[in-house]
Image (cartoon, rainbow over all chains, first blue to last red; front, side):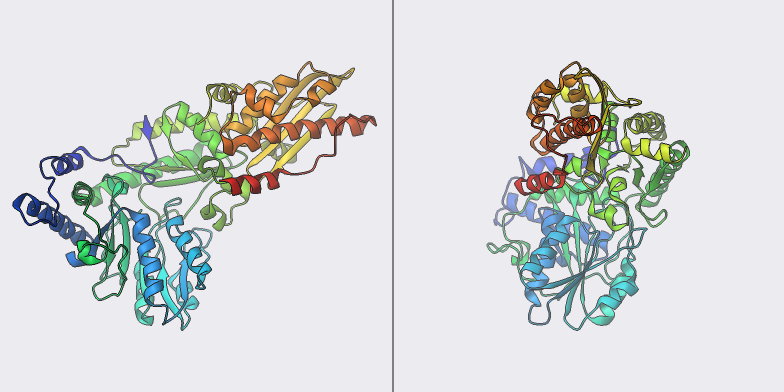
Length: 390
Length: 146
C-alpha cells in the first residue's frame, strides 16, 4: 500500500509503541497513589509534560493532557468564552477552521456570542491586518488555525499573535497539523492557547494536549479529582501520554532534514501532476504550506470516484468531496478559496509521511493520468467542455 | 463501504458514452451536490434499443447509471417506467444509506430522457410527469437524517 493520508492519521512508530507498552501491564499503578509503582507513573507523566513543553517553548506547568485535538479546541474556545463573558461576547476565527473549532464557535453563537469568520484569500490565508480590522471592544478571543488540514496553508501565526497581544486579546491556535512538522515557540509567537493531537505525529490516537499560558484563567474542563492541576480531572492515560511525548520527541529530531526531504517529494508530486494532467489546479498557497501537503482539483471529475480507483491500486488518499465524508456539501475549505462546486467536489488530498519514497510518487504519477482520463471520458461536464472548445 | 457488485459496476461500467441522434436525452443533478447524470436513449417501436450515460459523480453514481442502462435495454417504455430506484439499488446488492440518493438520481435521469422522447414525438407516456429537480430536496432530507 502507498499511504498518502498522513493528515488523517499516522501509524504509531515502533519506538513509540515500545515506550508505551510497559505502562499497560507492569507499570499499571494509578499516578495519584502514594506507593512506589504509582509514583513511577507520576514521574513518567511529569517527564512527558516537560518534553512537550520543551518542544513548544512552554513551561511544563502550562501543558495539560487531553484526549485529543478536538477536546483541546473545545476546552479553549468554550472555556475562554465562559471565563470572559462579562468582558465581551465576540470571537474572531476564519472560515477554513477544522470543525473542532467551527462547531464550538457555532455553538457559542447559539448562546448569544458573536463570531467573525474571516474570509481567507484565494491562497487560503488570512492576514494579521484582517484580524486587527475585525477586533472590537468586546472581542475576547481570536482562534486561528496554525496550518490547515485540507490545503496545508500555514497562517502568519506570529503576526496574528502580535496583534492579539497589542490589543490584549486571548489568542488560541489549533496547531494539530503543525505540531511535529513546524518549529513552534509559544512565547515568541504570543500564543496563549495551543491545541495538539498525538496521532498526527506518529503517536497514539486518543491523546492530545492544550497549552495554557500561565496566568490565563481557563475554567476546568472536567471536574473531579486533582489530575492536570484540577483542570482536567480523571485518571491519566499514562501509556498514551508517554506515547505522545515519545512521538513528539522523535518528530522534532532532524526536523530540518526530514522537512527538506518531504518538501522535495511534495514538489515532485505537484510538478508531476501539473505536467501530466491538464485542467487541474493546486489548492492552497504554493510555498506557505505544510511540507507534506498536496491538494489538487481535477476539473470535470468527482473526487470520490478517483479515490476508489486509486484505492484499487493500493493508493490511500482523501478527498474534499462530500461523497467521502457522508455529509453532502463539498469541503467548506475549498469553497472558501472560491472554487466552484464541481471543482471542490473534484479535489484530492495527498499528505506525505516520513516513509514515503520517490518511487511511490512515480507510481502515483503513472496511475493518476489514466484514471483522470477514464473519469473524464464518463463526465458530462467534460463532454460539454470539449464541445464548447472544439 | 460498497458492495462488490457496486465496485464491479464502477470499475467496468457498461454503456458509457453518447448516442448520436438519440431519441431522448435527460440530464439531472447539479454541480452543487456533486452528481450530474445524463442518459441517452435510442427508442424504436416503443422499445429501448440502446441506452448510454455520462455521469459526473461518486462511485455509487457511476455504478447506478451503468446498472440502470443495463436494466432498461431491450425493455418497452412501459416496462422501463417500472424500473425504480430501489430496483437499481437492489440489483447492485444495495447501497450505503447516504448513497441512496444516487439511485433516485438514476431513476430521475431515465424519466427525464423519456420525457424528452415523449415531447419530441408528441406522445404521452402513462405515469410520466415533467422532470423537476428534486435532487436538492433529497439532499436536504438526507442531510437531516444523518
